[in-house]
Image (cartoon, rainbow, N blue to C red; front, side, top):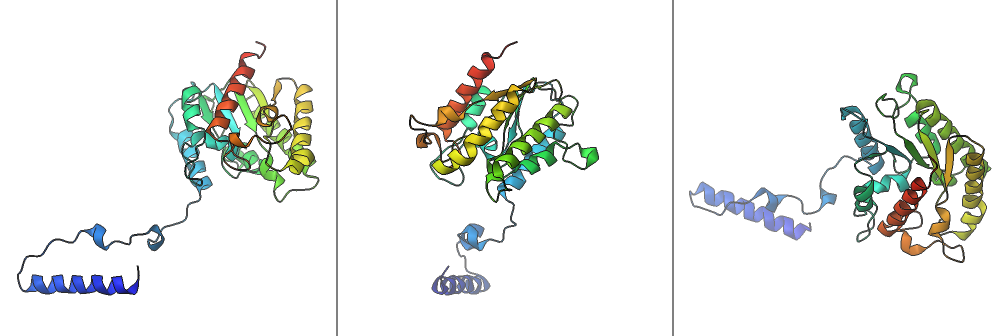
Length: 270
């Protein structure tokens, strides 16, 4: 608010007080008329999105009376997390996967994805609470048939070297922890999605995916779902219409992911 507007408002308030003192009637001034017009003028504590997201998951895990209806659990970072978002809060006019999730998974699935999580953060979230972790798989009544995992792209930023080995070994550690906590569940490790950087795809994403495929093929009870192929065009480049930005799927992308996932599950041997 500029200084001229401030002075004018002060004069009006002073005049209103004077008139009231003289016993004359004046129109009431609402609180909304004197509050700051912009959020930038209002003191507000900082709560990052991932903090609220993790808190919401903690609340859900602690407050739900029964988790026996959960048949599927999704574990990952923001790409998994954003199944839970509709309108994209960072890109006005763009949408994430909430509509698709509600159509297909809401009644039987639990989403444990947290935006920004690296592999080591997920390892902490799955570590039992009695050993110092967050204990997100601790509840005995949480016995999903299938656990879907997509993880690792955040470890490509500020990466340990060699990055491909670091990401591969980290995802394998998460799989080991899941099997420790939920030995009866089938585990589906999903490929990393393509980025908009062809060099990164060639040098990191595709090698990680190849490693995870090989690991799944030699590990009983583990399956590999290749999503990468569906998200690139005939030349191997990221299909931009399936993404809101360089990494995160659009609503159309989440719908394709859903279709690929359901077809994969229906083709699984029983």
